[in-house]
Image (cartoon, rainbow, N blue to C red; front, side, top):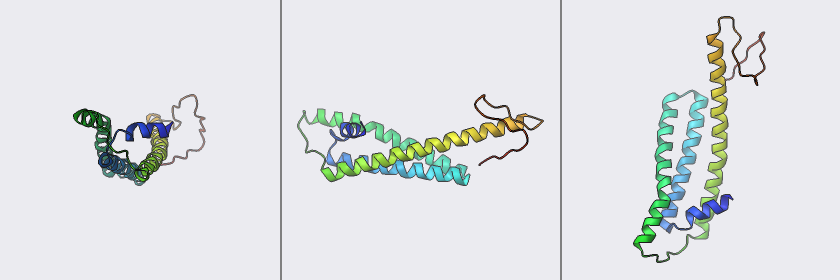
Length: 147
């Protein structure tokens, strides 16, 4: 499935566009990693900078299909040489890396959100126990929170 998706995106791109696409994937992967490190270091400004960069790269990536279609229309449907196999493989590798990083990033943000909800519940209560969802087990005697 992922290979077909990549081929769908990379197929109509010129060699130059494919190189730019690869660069964007790699940049987005670096930004996801930077954001995860910022969360771990509790560095809000760095996290916010990374979010801005992620938005910019995602906006650029979303333009690729439109740009490729416009270029094909401008060339009157003339076939361009296909993207070389090495570049296509590098794009596939970068997309796989990005997918794995995205899963880790999602898990980290979910964990951080859960921790924040626990803290919010703890600080809302005068007696100490938090107000949890039904799926979280309450231990009124001890509290341990990960940050």
